[in-house]
Image (cartoon, rainbow, N blue to C red; front, side, top):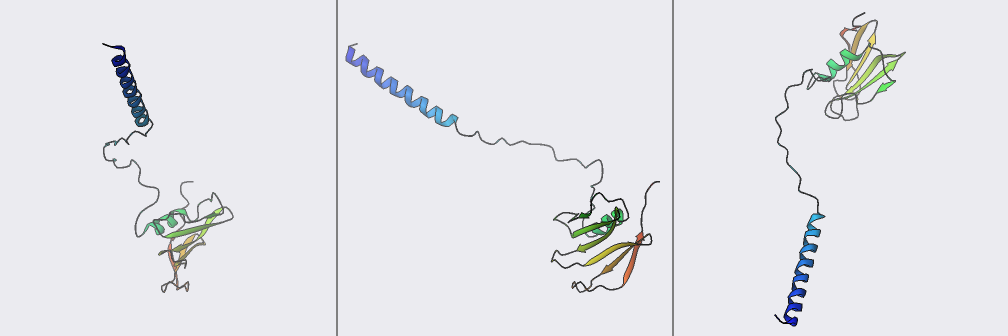
Length: 145
């Protein structure tokens, strides 16, 4: 093999090695594809959810909270965005009253409060914050002593 042929082969080989190295370096810098994890479907929880669901969720929640010791002055949107808007207010360290907006239109549909050991409620039938007659919802559940 002549020297000129050797140099041409060395140059072509060097270009191929350098080009391959740059190609591999460019692909190595890309993020790896996301891995898909296949897991078993979640099993039923050991304990029921803390917040009851659909239609009567705010009622069950308020019957369980009103009259109990308060952890702050106010709970704003206590059930979260997927439910009726419920604001609960404390008086003298106890959850004493609440307002409920069932359709989240910024007009309160129900008022709840504790009166003489009983949980009371007033409903605005026309959704205009004009409330009707008072109804008794149940006694305040003090819990174990």
